[in-house]
Image 1 (cartoon, rainbow, N blue to C red):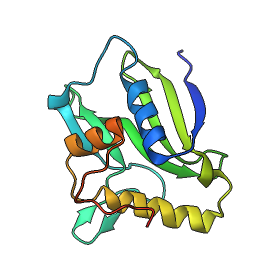
Image 2 (cartoon, rainbow, N blue to C red):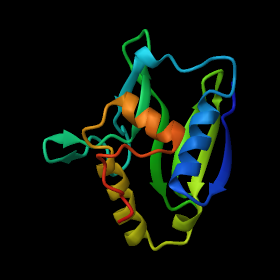
Image 3 (tube, rainbow, N blue to C red):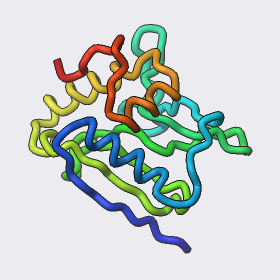
Length: 151
């Protein structure tokens, strides 16, 4: 049985954490097939299939597999295990190798404040395509039409 390894690194900004997570996804020989990028919706936790307005909140980007399943490759999460708000990323060459790119400032936030910020981050993804989210997170450059979730 293969064990899952998770590396936890802390970053001072959303952009730095997202860029590190995207780099992790592509660190091996297998690169992301952009034609298979899809929106990934959370399947567990309090935001499972959450609806805001007419749209479910996206929590990240996945790849459409041959089985028809959308497997997450990078997503934003929130927890109370010492990682705070963080990007989870899987190395596409070895999906057992995972990164939690934690936003350092969120680790010591109260659960209520952290959840409020997390929902703002999720809402910033609303109505964006998988390609747009991937480009934002990969480059650290927020699309011009998206409000800053930290305002």
